[in-house]
Image (tube, rainbow, N blue to C red):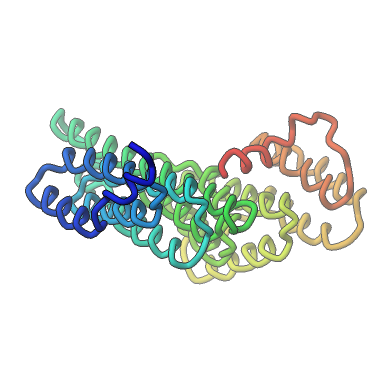
Length: 324
């Protein structure tokens, strides 16, 4: 059948949307999922992308509203794939749809009574709860990573639309059972919201193990600096200090935090010898995390033109590229 004939024979899209909504309301969630996929594919084949997007957006929202995260995520990812096929520009209308889908992903904290497990049933319940949380995070991550990549390719900033990074960073921080602060920070430094990033780090200071807080702050500052973003690095550090004055716990006075403070001052002038001296003096603190050394090498190259001896050390930037 020719594409033109398919194009003529396809009914108005609202008929499909109404029909599929009824299928879901009758409880046939997975059957509806397959129908959403097959029907939207017909519109894509006919290059009626706008209508295919209407179907997929409706399906993702309805499935998520009914608590079917896997089904909703499948359609959400297919929605973004169709944006790419249609070469849809990154604009407010499409971003609003992505926001709507994002808000429908559930936020379900681990029940407090499951944290202190005392018998086999509690252990099983906790394992199930954690497994569901991991699945939600993986689904949301796949959707937003695809959206970030689409936004970068079709009119947004080179590293992706900042708000999408903020959405993903926030969800990872609040919903992921095992916090990965490096991963979270990589998104927040792209989010263009250092005040929110500072608030998240202050919150982390109150829930992390001893010695993790200063590392998280140092990584965040160095990530900003490795991008040449002195303004947000300084703003975030000042905001952390300000917020920490009114909340517990207080900001750590560790050697690593001292190093970060001196570094921010040093980078405001042409002072490569002082930069190198600081790295030597605080080597034991910096060596607590190899990523700090990699970021400092990138900072030296960006601010002082120092070429890295090992070209593989540019992994941080490469990771950002892979993230989309």
